[in-house]
Image 1 (tube, rainbow, N blue to C red):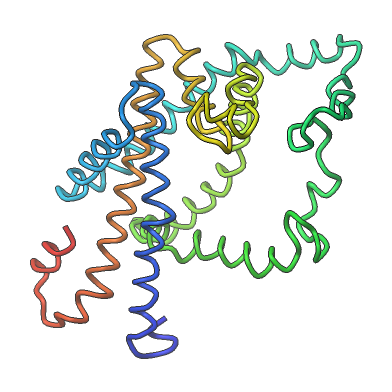
Image 2: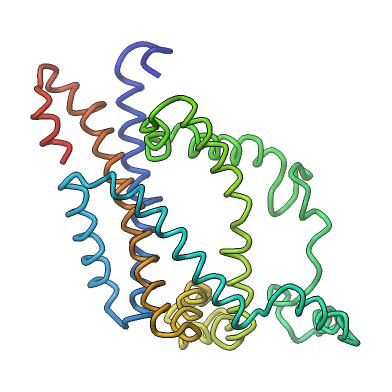
Length: 298
């Protein structure tokens, strides 16, 4: 941005905005999700869980073990895949069995008939997806995603996150060569096609297994179960791990989840450190030595 427009103001502005957004959109979400998992798995206090996660992350970041995060992410992926397969095979069954059971079912539209029951809240009724589910550009008055909001809101936000956010770009900049960076980017795009199997399907399994907890009615019902009025969907995945997995895999999955959270947080802290040191601190201390910048960054 400095090369394009000149001056330091827009560079400083973007650095400050990025640091503020890290706090409200990245760090807070990671800490909250980690505390939820620990609260469900170990029955720890939320604030205690946050302090422990922050302490471990700070130790890794300050000591400079950022490279560990790359290998850690790879191990997280393998460990998480093992756990996902275990959950799906134990309760969801394999795809062939599911198709056979569905074909034998005499009335597979019973859920659709249930959706017409007038006593059921319209938000909780089971039905077919909207006809617009696979349309990206919808009418301007569409309540879910009008085309103007998609083009001017979602699209720039996605481009910023994947192509300009320092936390994401630093991984590409750390590649050994241009071909490595290009190949890794293409591979990431391919891997991004499978979240439905690691996010959506486990959530559907949890919704079926725990209809009273995960499918609680928003309001006093959910408040009594999980302490939140808006719903208890946050406990869907931790509940699957704790209730269904054997003790060995349960410990593995707990380790994988915490390692993934810590790895993500170390990337965020490292990115924030780079932004502050290079784009803000160096503007005040133009003659600062490398050792000084390293200490400030840590």
